[in-house]
Amino acid sequence: MIILGIETSCDETSAAVVRDGRWVLSNVIRSQVDLHERYGGIVPELASRRHVTTIIPTIDLAIEQAGVSPSALDAIAVTEGPGLAGSLLVGVNIAKTLAYVWEKPLIPVNHLEGHIYANWLTLPGEPEVEPPIFPLVCLIVSGGHTELVLMRDHGDYGLLGRTLDDAAGEAFDKGARLLGLGFPGGPAIQRAAEHGRPGRFALPRAWLGDSYDFSFSGLKTALLRLVEHYRRPAQTNRRSTSRKPFPEYEPPVYAPTMPVADLAAEYQEAIVEVLVEKTARAARDFRAAMVLLAGGVAANALLRRRLQEAVHVPVRYPPPILCTDNAAMIAGAAYYLYQRGVTAGLELDVQAQLPLVTRTLIRT
Amino acid sequence: MVDVDRLLLAIDTSTEQAGLALYDGAWLSELSWSAGRSQTASLLGQLDHLLRINRVTARQLRAIAVTLGPGSFNGLRVGMSVGKGLSYGLGIPLVGIVTLDALAYPHTARRHPIRAFVPAGRGRVVYADYHLRSGQWVRDSLLRTVRAEQLADGLTETMVFAGVLGAELAERLKGQPKVLLPPPSWRLLRPGWVAELALQRWQSGAVDRLETLEPIYVHLGTTEVVAPVELPESR
Ligand SMILES: [Zn+2]
Image (cartoon, rainbow over all chains, first blue to last red; front, top):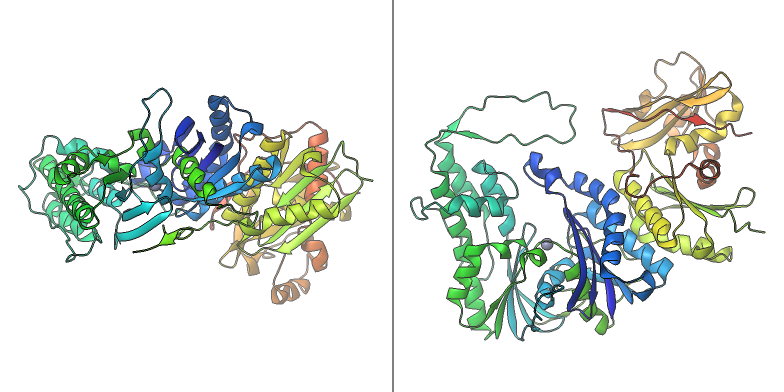
């Protein structure tokens, strides 16, 4: 079964063709990082605008690279949520229209489910990836989400815990902005932390008792208090922004003595430590056969290493290109949804706040 | 009979009143409904309905038209996405039409200057002016935002007002000098007008590119510059 996937939930425009939920035939991702960099974070309105112009060339290239014709497609899959409403609607409307004129089934996919199913995918020319084994525990960590999920079978999810405030990726972004390191924050902090020493400054870890939930906003506030000592008044080059609908980011100015590397190292350590501890405990508590990582933050090297040290079952994570938001994971998850009879009609709408467990069995 | 060699579909989701039209240069079928903010949920179902009641299939369409705005940002993106999907999926051309042009178009026959406007949220409207210059209708290149109740302030010439207004404001404008206010049915954006302008553009060889065409986004309190355009007269 050959599925065209479309993903526009945040700031990547992506289209992909995947066979049988496992074999990636093409996976085109148009990143918008260049667009959002100067704002120090994603500007939702600008993200939606970029999707409108890039979506058709992206889909066209995905179909061409897969070497299939539209008539060879068996279904069209699209992210219905969660995500930015203005961005989601571009993909959902294009997908519905193509399904309508090409007379193909339309499969609505939860973005988080897509992230999990990135672990089933084999990239072109790469050795075959063995399907993960149930029951498994999956940590989905990205700029938009932090969820700890127990999965007993295809479509059988239990939400063990989630972030109560900022997502892990968001915490990295905010930390990087405070440290003046740029956007996106995850890679920026990881790079800065390479030459730093964690523990020189103490940042808090929010354990929240023995729940599996996360909280990162206190960490960000604590970092703010630390860097405040080094702050210098900004040489304001602020032009009148009153007419500008989207104000640009002006990095803070700090004394050269600020130990950026040590602060970044401790900040990264604080985020990773909580993620690893809770994931490892869930894996023990639910006798998981495997632990999966998914989402953009799964590319963090410290997180991968620590998690592998902390659990005694195999830890799996997708290659970097499948960790970021991409359409191959949507087309992949769609295959398993379709096996269970999940399709949508022309009335499909976007669901900005869609939780993970909707079209699926809930058994926590 | 439908002329299937020139069958064009026009889509308008600039405002909460959405519209669709099928047009072949002579025959016209229109659908207009209150979509609110859920254009995504209703647009394709209504399109399917319009095609069915006219016994036409999507594969018989030869061109697609879509309104470019100004209007609601998300609303415009819905129409633009469906328009692009149809154009790409069926391999047929796409033509963008400025929403205000379609509103002004039916009034060109009256030979008075025209002020066309759409709601811009928070009690504001976006408007543009149209003048007859040397026998040719021309739109100003400036799209301006103003509070709806200030729409007729400082008029120096008599103008036709084209666009949807609240009952109270419409009543107030009607009494003002230099304001010509057509009845509501002539001020609501009819999808047929979009189709007519688009068919003329398409037949003259003007087609837009899927990788560059995007809505016109006018922010409150700002003025947006768009290329001036010559408008055909509706006679
Ligand atoms: Zn994501």
